[in-house]
Length: 308
Ligand SMILES: Nc1ncnc2c1ncn2[C@@H]1O[C@H](COP(=O)(O)OP(=O)(O)OP(=O)(O)O)[C@@H](O)[C@H]1O
Image 1 (tube, rainbow, N blue to C red):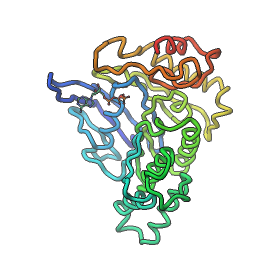
Image 2: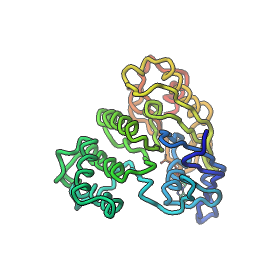
Image 3: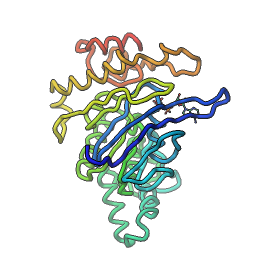
Image 4: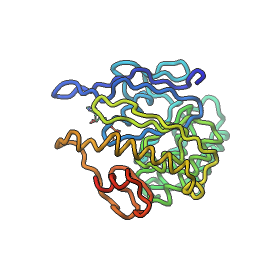
C-alpha cells in the first residue's frame, strides 16, 4: 500500500478500574487508504467502539497511537465526523438547524450565508430529508433522525466518517435504503469510512475490507478480509454471487468457529448474554445478524443458531 491515509500503530488501551487496569486492546495495527470503506466486526465487548473512539480523538491510547494524513490524532476534530447508533440530534433544534450547527462550526469563515444554506439543503436532500426541514427530532421517526445525523456528518465534509452501528436501531427496509444511499454517497465523495457493525451481510455488502477482531481482553485484529466485489453493488444480484457467499461464510467462520462466544470462554456476571431474537426465522440471531433462510444455513450458521 502507498503511504496510508490513516494509521493505527501498536495501539494498547488500558482502562483504570477499581480492580486495576483493564487491557481492552493490545497491539492493534491498522492501515487505511483514502476512500476505503472498512468495517469492524467482532463479538460484543471486544473493543470496536474503543478503536473508533481513539480514531475520533475521544480516547487516548495508553500506548501507540493514531495518525491521520501525517498528523497525530489527540483530540476530536471536524475532519473526523462520528455517527452513533442512536442519533445525537439536539432535540430543541429543527432538522435544518441541527445540520446548520455543524456547518457553521466548519464553514463559517469560508462559505457565505447563502452558500451554507445551499450546502445544508444539498446534504439533507442527499438523505431524502429535504421535506422535513422544520420538524424537530421528536416529530420524526428514528430512521429519519438517523438520516439527519448522517447528513449532519456528511455536511462537515469529513476526511473520515466514523460510524458506530449507524443502522443498528432501524427496521430492515429503512436500513437497506440507507445502506444503498451510503454506498452511493461514499462512492461519489470518496470519503474514508470506518463502520462498526454486527450485521455480516451489511459488512460484506458495504466494505472494501472487513477487519475482524479477536475477543477481549487484550483484543486485537484477528483477520482481515478484502472484499473484491465490483461497485456499484446490488444486494439482490449479490445474494446468489458465489464470491459474496464465500465472503460472508469467511466472516461467520471467524466469528463462530475461530472466535466463539466470549460468554462461553469467560462466563462472568457482567458479560452480556447472546441475544436470541428471531431464531429460525432468518432474522437477527445471536449477537450478529444473518439473513439466510434456515434451509440454506451453512455449518457455521447452524452453530450460531445452536449457540443463541
Ligand atoms: N471507560 C471504560 N472503563 C473500563 N472499561 C471499559 C471502558 N470502556 C470500555 N471498557 C471495556 O473495554 C472493552 C471494550 O469495550 P468496547 O465498548 O470498545 O467494545 P465493543 O466491541 O464496542 O462492544 P459492543 O459491540 O458491545 O458495543 C469492554 O470489556 C468494556 O467493558
